[in-house]
Structure formats: structure tokens, C-alpha cells
Length: 599
Image (tube, rainbow, N blue to C red; front, top):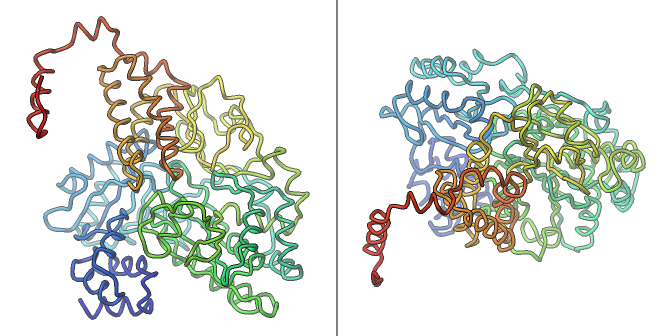
């Protein structure tokens, strides 16, 4: 084992910054990261064992013990649950003979809960040894487990259940492109935008991007051209470009579609950005849940090198040397935040950094770094080809161009839609065939839950913005149980725990929510939930902590009656109050806490 691990480390030139790759390779060989491996890594990278363990412990998919020859990670997102996840989970437990978050006695099959895997349009779904299986049913589960026990290979089973699509990436995922718009999905000739770019100065390219008014498509909406300009002005010896493909917001899957349908468009956008920034290296940070497409993407990169669109003297431009590498994550929602992503790229825990300095000043390897998401970089290509005026003629005054929406939940036609900014929520619901709608979760759990009185609002930065996730919630759903509680559990699980309010208050909010849902709440509990949620919004340093209370805050604002219907009046509370139990509980608490006197 020691020699094998040494060879894996040597593959990355004993570079401490490539710790994520080293751990991923070891996990791939041994189905875990054994204790002996941690010692060897620490010795060869000249870091402490604690440094290795703290990185490893941060990420969902790293394990110290084997996760099973067949490691099954079943998505437990809100949409998966309303689409039948519970029955699928019970079927797995019955057929495997063990509960979730454990491995069968023979070590063959491990069952694990996992957060959103980017498959909301085809739930219930699972990752099995990194291969995606969608639209699972109890009957499918029975056949899959039977195949595992009979010694079938995972790809053989995938072939039996796949639909023949996306064979280049060996996946049964259906991309469900429902509406192709004029920007991302319009036809174009690969390489043409790069050839136009190298005929211009970097300053001209940045100016054209600025004039287009394109804003980041990841959710924050910062103007892309300004970000590029600030980075160029930072004066670093090296500049890096990072594409954020850590699409972890529950309900979002649009970038999965770009990565599989339009990878050359994305890479061309990265190359253009590299030219404008004078960067030598671009990095695609690909979430672990999309590991199944890595070989496919590597092949596309090689095709572009063969076309002289990547590498040295790109498109015949002397001195324009730029290449792209793919960095896998290991399961951490917080790495969607740009500074947390950069920490992960450096082989560390994905904890967000304090700002300033901003990444455009000091980012990857402490050098100026631009982080753009997949959709943003893909759109850049069409701006260079068609001009800034063409782009900003679409959409609204503050929201130029088009937007990809990932629409799922209670609708007939879940999938990806490219729309112009400015569409109303009602128009969107009509487009996807949604009727009898109770609510729409705009922007995923970190966004806003709106009621029917707000369905005339427009999808735009100046009204109701979204990174892309749009979840339709039917009137037959229990909004608090099926969605709000699930979202709060997601944020608790995904918190990096660096900030006290995020680490503790999110749990307190969930427990207060459970109190109300169990019928034991009083009116003041609702007001306290709201006040504490507002405090959490103000007290944390990163986007996760600042939005973790949004599922509660926005549903109190827009669906307060659902909370009020569950609380007890003062008279009901007094009539059901169990004094003897309260005294017993208090005595038990006092007995467990030293140096407290009971009164």
C-alpha cells in the first residue's frame, strides 16, 4: 500500500496544493482513504496528519472506511422526496439488508444519504460508484441489487437501464432541454469567437463584455466585465481563471446540461477570458457529483488542443499560451462560494475567506483570480460573435440577455429553459404546464418562496433574481414538512461551521420549526423564528450563512397562515401543559449540568 500511495503522490509532484487530487485518487483505488495513507501523505507533503485529516473530513465523499464495493448515494432533496424517494429507499434497505448510512455485513453494498446531485428533473436518482441512475422505482432497485449480488459490473447494469442517450459520457441522464433560446443554444462555429478575439486587444474584449451588461449567472449578478477589469488592474505576476461548475444549489441542473451538450462553447468562453485577463491557466472546478462526465470533458479539451484552440500560440497568435485543467470537488455545497472554491483548489477545507481582499486581488495561490460560472462563460462566446448591442437588446434594462432556468417539481415538463430576462412567474408556470400551484421556490433554498399573489413578478435582477433553480410546489404538498424542513436540514448539513451563528442558530431554527410543526408552538414562537432568522442573515460572513434562514423567513413572510394554523392559543397551551413532565424534564437537565441549582 505504501508504495502505491507514494506513486499517486508523485504523480502530482508532491505538491501540497494538489491534496484534493491525491485523496480522490486514493479513494478511487481503496474505496476509502485508509489510516496508513494519511501518514504517507503527511510525510511526503511535509504537512501534519491533522492538515490531511481536516481536509478529508470536510468533504462528503471522502471516507476512512470502505463505503461498500457498490457505494449507493441516494439523493434526499425535497423534490426527490415528493417524487417517491421514500419508497425507493425502503426498497434498497429491504434488498440489501441494511439501513442507510451503513454497509452490508459482507461489505458488498453501502447505502448513503446525499444532498442534491443535480438530477431534480428525473428523480428519484442515485450515484452508484459515481454512475448516475435516474427515475428509480422499487422494481428497478430490486433488479439492480440482484445484479450487484450476481457479480455484474456497474456499467453493465447502467447499460441495461439506460435509454441509449449520452453514451459518450456513459450516463442514463436525460438533459431535458425544453426551450432553446437565441444565446446559449443558437448555432455557431467552434473556434470563430477565439479567432475574432486574438485579432483584438485584451482591453477591447473586456470593454465589449462590459458594454454588453452581462452579469454573473451564478446568482450574485456581479457585472462580468467589471470583474475582469478589476482583476487585470490588480497587477499580479500571474492571473488565474476559474470556472465554477460546483452546481450545488438544490433544484439547479442547467450547468450539467451545458457541460454535456455545449462543452466546447464553455471552453471557448474560458479561452476568451484567458486572453482578456492574460492568464496562462484555467481551471474547471467540477463538482464530484458530475465526476461521471470528467473523461468526456478531458476528451473535448484534447480535441480543442488538436485544433490549436488550446495550448501554445492559440489560433496562431504568438505568445497566447493558455490551457485548462479539470479539478474535481469531493462533495461540499459551500465550495460554490468563490473563495471557498479557491480554498478547495488549494487542497484545503472549503471554508470561505474573509474579504477584502477579494479573489480578483488575491485568489488562487494568492494571485489575482476571476471566478465565473459555466453559464456566464458560455454566454461570452456569443457576445464576441454578435456584439454587445445584440446581447443587451434582449432582456430588461438591468438584466441583459437570456437566462437558463432549471425547472422541476410539480409541473408536466421539468427541464432546462433558455428564456429572456423579464418573463413573469405566471408565464413561466404556463410554459412548463404547472397548474394548482401553491408556491414557487425561486433561486433554490437560498432564494425566495413566493405565493400566488406574486406570480406577476418578473424574473430579473431588478425584481426577483435567480441563479437558475425554480421549484414548483403544488397545492397538495405540505410546504413546511416537504420543503422548509428539508431545506433547513440541507443547510445544517452543508454548513462549514466556521461561523457561530451558522453553526448553532440554524439548528435552533430547525428545532423551533419542529416544535411548531408538532403542534406544541405558541404565537411568540413564530415571531422568535423570524427575529432569529433576521439575525442569522446579518451575522454570518458568507452566502450560505446569510441565506440559511431564508426558507423560514420567506415562508413566514408569504405563508404565515401555515405557521399560525399549527400554533396553540394560550388556553389550549394551558389545558395541555403537563406540569409533572415539565418538572421532571427540568430536573433531568439540571442533573446533567454541573454547578446549577434547581429552584
